Length: 184
Length: 241
Image (spheres, rainbow over the protein chains, first blue to last red):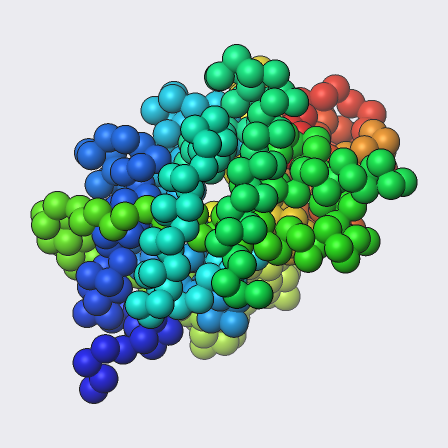
């Protein structure tokens, strides 16, 4: 048997109830899922619960994963983000999510996370985000990791809505230009 | 037109982050159906937003979490067994029907009706569960006049599931009718919602005859039994999506 089975073969085995395959995926991605839930919830206990819920969803939804739509890691992290944001709302810490993102589209955007070159790419994005001006980083943080709409961010920060829009646009354009330039 | 296009284009990055307000997002989705350049630009922004999911430094959870998951998996019954038992029960009913061979035509008819109803209910339940499990499904909570619940909206598959808690049984001669509401306020019937006396919530799945994107909300009214072509009775609730 392959000692390093790829994501697709593992998730297919999980879909057939293979707990060892599930644990292999857990070992491979628990740190990434937990990093995301912890970042969103900022509470170790809640983050562990959200991480657990995410992997239980992976277990129960494995048969719904469609390889042709994209990588497993983005599918899993999309579930993790939604699980954590749902938990955030349940705790009454944020208003209802007005998230129009389409995970199907989203999780086709990043290649297989088990490849080290992708690790380097994600790490580079982390540093690019941190190089953004503070006010731009703040709107990305509130929008994507706290599930807030532009109007909610405007209210939260006391900035005019137009300012929020301008800063969000500038931030995303900067990330797009810098992070995607190597692929062009 | 150019000004409109520019406005939509300016909203693309916020849309990719899921940060557009609902009405702006709905308008942009319509624009995207006909604008190649915006779709291409959005694809770039969505690559960035997908990257943001993985761009955080990894952080391992405590070792106890893995053990907890192992225990929970061991205790879990996989969902398909539930349906297998149900299928066995229905199949058993048919076998019994044939073996006994003494059942009158009317009884067969009644059983068929019951089975068809069960099949419809099971299909609705399976669809709702599948929608719950799908990461693209939009979930909208509501709580109006003592009726609380959730709307699950899958605009790609044009499916909508309604879970309503504490909806009282419809008065005699009446039924709850669901309506899909378009931006002009016109209503298209989405079928009926029938509270069961023995359970506190009602559930229905609507397979929209038109793209769900062409509607902006769901309404429920109280109508005469058999339903109405257009709403005539009192409004029970309205949920925008």
